[in-house]
Length: 224
Image (tube, rainbow, N blue to C red; front, side, top):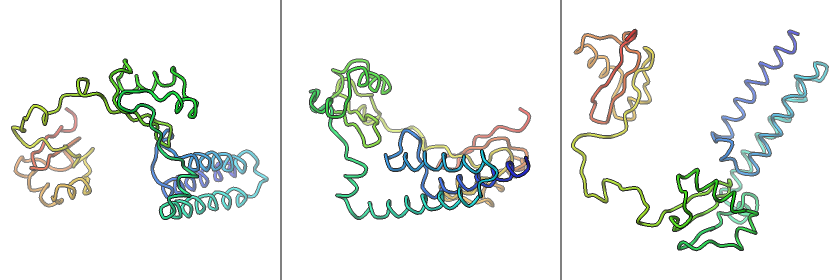
């Protein structure tokens, strides 16, 4: 039992490291080759766990080989556009100037139910609202709406922000400082601690603290 536990832990960390090396993607965003390798890795990792008599190396070596193959192939695909198109494919235009390409739908084996589902996922319930639609290599649908149906933006209304509305980043979470967030807006730990001292607070008192580019702080104290 202990052997199975140790094998499982080791393979778990190996797969986590392997996926970090391969890059961060959601399952729905994987290219075909990446999806195949992910499935292979999961199946290979299961063999030494299910059968304790199987050498651990029979799982570790194939997994490392697949990771190296994926990293190498991704480097090759960066340089060879033709090979990249052959392996990963290329985006396909499904709707152009509001006109649905039925031949392309047959080529992609897309039916109207599939298309309607993808459009609803984009908050589009009428195909006549779509000006341009592209099926990406991952199978996801990207759309561009016709002008009357686009979301109104501040730029369209010629509005300017009344104050700094930059994205608020997390600077402190559960009493721990996020240095990466501070560095993103050109601040450091010393600056943050000084700001807290002005408010008679310590880092350990903070449950969550966020800030914008101007250095405006918003925080929640522990226990509130």
